[in-house]
Every structure is written in structure tokens, then in C-alpha cells.
Length: 107
Image (cartoon, rainbow, N blue to C red; front, side):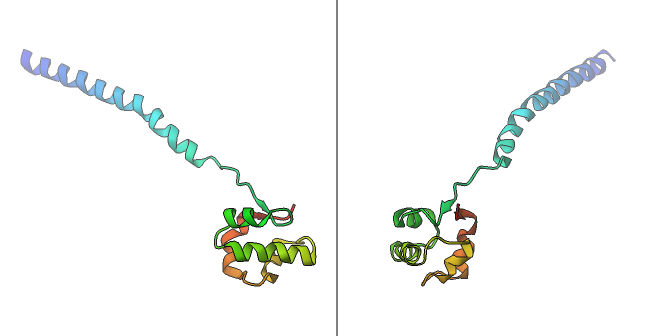
């Protein structure tokens, strides 16, 4: 009978330590996921002030030729009134605009 009580007591003690160690680890494990959910501000590329090198570096699917075409269009027609006006630049289509829409601004 003493062995049964001793075994039960030992089991309860080990189970308590196990639960306590799991509970102590939980906040540390949750901290990285909280950091991941924080919004990281995105620096927008200003179509009216960015040079060709910046456009090429920051935008997806924009190489040297397209970046120079954007700058040339801006020089010829003045500042962009909206991001959608980028479609007027030769070589820029809907797909390219949509890939970059969140990265673009005109302010």
C-alpha cells in the first residue's frame, strides 16, 4: 500500500513539473509570432521624383529600359497624376502595374 501511495505522489510531482515547464516556455514561444504580425511600413517609390536607378532597383519587373522610359515619359508629360497613369508608358502593362501598385506613390 505504501508503494502505491509513493508512486502516486511521485507521478503527481513529476506531472506538476512537466506542466510548469511547458507553461513557462509558452510566452517565449509566442513572442516571435507577435513580432511577425506587426506591420512593417513600406517605403513607397515616388513616380514623380525617383530616378531610373531607383525605379529599377525597387520595382519588380522594371529593368533599365523601362525605368528610363518612365523617367522620359515624366520629363515629356509632366508629373504623374495617378499611379494608373503608369500604363501610358510604353512597355508597362497591367501585370507590371499590379505587381508594383503597393510600392508606388505620386506624392
